[in-house]
Structure formats: structure tokens, C-alpha cells
Image 1 (cartoon, helix red, strand yellow):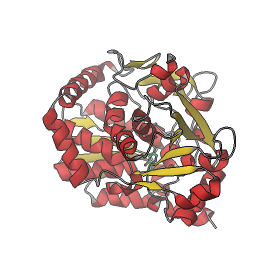
Image 2 (tube, protein in one colour; image 1 turned 90 degrees about the vertical axis):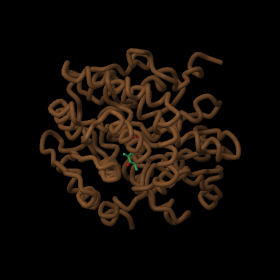
Image 3 (cartoon, protein in one colour; image 1 turned 30 degrees about the vertical axis):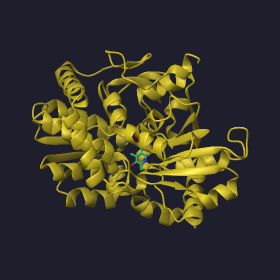
Length: 389
Ligand SMILES: *Cc1c(COP(=O)(O)O)cnc(C)c1O
């Protein structure tokens, strides 16, 4: 086995590094909080009682295991065998709930009374508000003004669930700025609040912790699939649904493919740099100034990407592709009409790559493909109404 193929997606180095990426680039005041979270996570993850609680929540509350659906019609059209891992069927409508239920359990274990979160499309905010309601915690969610306008439906859901949604008016008024504000709020309330980060970015231990909580996607899919597929594909914003999916297949010969938005492709167009407390591939200008990402999918409008993806890319174990907004809109419609499934704009990035690549050397006819459908499209109806005919 080559060195690249041995990248196992196990624990990072004690410093929180995946190769040259990751780490803990935060203000001095947050170092103890990150260290305490790491200790709490190591203890919880080694405690069978924690796994029992999490497993009960997953099955009794979140609707796991989610189905693995053969996409018979699309498969016939494309000449590949396509299986869909249905995170759109999880409670609250996306994979975000997997991460949040685990972090809420951890927050309770650490004696915290409050969750602080950032959100882009609002799915992580909704999942956080949901877990906070269930656990009797206070929730404060930071969301860019521009995303609030695009995703009103999710703002209403968060408020109905009892969370406070704070509009962020700085910078591009999207996820990048919401994440800055949420981290600032955490500094100010670090004793009472847990920062419930939504993806596999942020300072150590978040990239590892969130990947472990999302690993359930890949492990279920591996057990449900009739055989190891040739290709495993998922969309990549911060990279959590892809990381959780890849974790179930990294030790197999399956090719791992992450699909980014052409306007927010940190793996394809980025350079090594530091953003939001970690070192990874980051969209930036020649002076290291972080650039704005631009995508029709609010959940992929993010200039960074989880450090483990940067490492998987650097070692060649995973490959990254980009698709355009137009291809994504077409993919939403094709999947809806072929299979009766309306997926999220984010998830449609993975579908769009399969549509484009099927029958080419990148995805030869006859290939078996497992695709994680990260969420459902209900939140995107306002965007889609103006775009899809
Ligand atoms: C948040 C979100 C994403 C992007 O986040 P990842 O961390 O890259 O998984 C993708 N799909 C949906 C439905 C989302 O809500």
C-alpha cells in the first residue's frame, strides 16, 4: 500500500495536525477552552455510556440509520450504478444533526448552559436550536444578513425552536463573517457557553471531533452497500458530510471525491493559510487576505475547508472537483424528476459531478457510485422558484 493510501482518518497528531494542516490558531483566551473540550471529548469518546446515549438519540430522535437508496432511473440514464445515502431523511433535514447531538451531549457533560453557533444556509443553526430545545440549553446563532435574506424559512424555524438569531452585518454578510462573530461571542462567554461548530474546520479538536460525530454516515453506508463502491462522492463546504462519508471508506480501494462550488473552491483554487483558528487550504489574495466565496448554495459559500481534506488532497487519497451554479440547478431538477427526491443545493453539487463525469474516464460506464445526499431542498424553494423551469 502506498503512503497516500495509508491515510487512515484516525486521530490527528497530539498537536491537532493532519500533516501540515490543522492546529489551534486562536487568541490566548481560548486555548484553555479548546484544551478542556479536547479532554472532555477524549473522555466521552472512551466512555461506553456516552456512545449508548448518542446511539439512542440517533435511532429514537434523529431517524438513523438513514436509508441507502438505489437511484434506479438515474442509474439507467447515466450507465452507472448510483446509490444515495439519504441524509436528507435525518431529523431537521440534513446531516448537521449528527454533529450537533454529539456536541450537545458533550456540552451537558461539561456543565455548559448555552450553545453558540454560526450558520450559513441555516441548517446548522436549526440543528443547534433543535438540540438546545431538547437538552434545555440556551442557543445563540450568528448568521450573515445576506444568508438571512436567502434562508428566511430556516430563520423562522430557529426562532420557533426558541433560539436567538443574531444578524451579522460585517464583511460579505455570509458564513465567514458569522463564524468570526460566533468565535468572538465564545471568547466573551467561554465559562458558560459551548461553541457548537458546524463543520470540520476551526481549532483542534473541532475538525477531529466533528469528523468522528459524522463518521456514522460512512459507517452506515459501508454496512448498507452490497459491496465497496468504485467511487464515493460528497459535496464539500467546510467538509463535514464528506469527511464523515470518507471515514467509512478510507481503508478501501474506493476513490474518494469531494465536490466544491466553483465560486468557493478552497481545495482547487486556495493556498495554504490560516482562517478561523486552523491552517488549511484557503481562498486568499496575493497578500493573504481571505477572499469572499460566491455560490448559489449558502452552505458552500465558505473560503476555507477542513484541514483533513487539505491533507487527504495533498496525499492524493481524495480528489476534489468543482461544479458551477448552472450545473447545480440542472442537477436538482434531474434528480427530482428521475427519482422524486428534491435535494439541497449543496448536495446537488455531488449529483452535478456524477451527471457530468458519467461515461467519461473520470467515471467510466459501469462504475458503482455511492453519493451522500447531505440534505433536502425545502430550504431552497425561494432560490429555486426563480431559477428552475
Ligand atoms: C451545511 C451543509 C453542507 C455543507 O457542510 P459540510 O460541512 O461541507 O458538509 C452541505 N449540505 C447541506 C445540506 C448542508 O446543510
